[in-house]
Length: 483
Image (tube, rainbow, N blue to C red; front, side, top):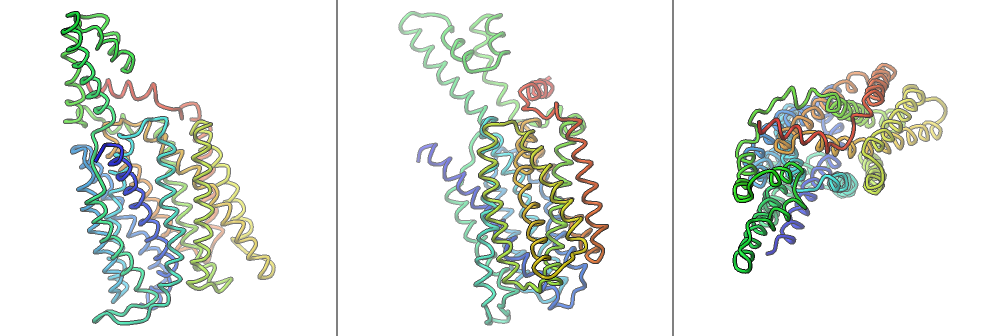
């Protein structure tokens, strides 16, 4: 099988992984609140269960990322992580008690840690100018799962039978369904996923092959020194390689080019400094964007099901339809962002997303904290608030992930993406806990959310000039790592 086909199948499998993560979220979130109620769980248990999933992912992400940076492989990591998804969802299906349900989400969350390895893989195997579109496509796959998931819920809610000692009903069936899907995914990863060397290493090997071919031709025809290979590498390689070739003996330089990529790949953390990497102004702003937007998103998601039950008497079917409609909106948003990112800078996309998020939060603070009017008016206020909140997510999500992958070192992308996802995991832990304890005091809950968004907006405005594509950032980082 040729390289291009393997690459397409590998990217297809990555999309499938994110699709299943979206489906899992969409089939479990609309029913977990009622599921906990059948197990006599207190309201705060909803926040605990949602946070447990994020907590284990927060811890697993950097570890899996570190693993992938050292080995430059992700296939074994994905297969290993999926085992936790399978076991966790089966425990959710068993559901004997609220504590087992809490533990099931804790176990399943470990499987999400593989996402940091996957983002590191994508960063190493895509060109910087294509990264926004690739990340948008991958994130759209997860949103497609959020769209498809509620459709499965419509059928899963009809389940009512026994499998041995286990009861399969509308609350336990999502766990069994997701367990089977993750098992099927294991076979897909086994046969349709390949680990590729980093793009820079692959280019270096191609240059070496071309140099050898040129050298043989020149020796046979004219016996010239290694001039052709130098020109070939100079036309494609970096400025430093051109300068070094021009200022030194050709034979010595050509034989000295291959080692650096091998040395770098064997020790990606040589002279690595976490403070130098993550405590830069632009990195802090992007991590803050990751935390604040996910904190607000998960807080609102946690609030939605109790709110719809209280004011509109929504059940599992109505909530599933609502999430399905939101999925359509988000996918459309990612498609638009993918188109927009080819025409404007990522920081512009990020600014647009923050403006939309601020408008959404102001609307929710005014109209949803204390709904007024009749049923139709309250429903209209709720729909507009949810629409605005969902609309801003694709802009912020794609822009901050793409920029983060560019301003951090490519050699430690797995670990860096793990840190980024852990920051997001911390937000998805605190968000549900914050909202779960304040469902009766929405002014306080949404006021804090508005304050965080205002802080992030100020940070972005102050640091706007530094949120640029890191053509000038990667070079010093690489130089520091090699010194």
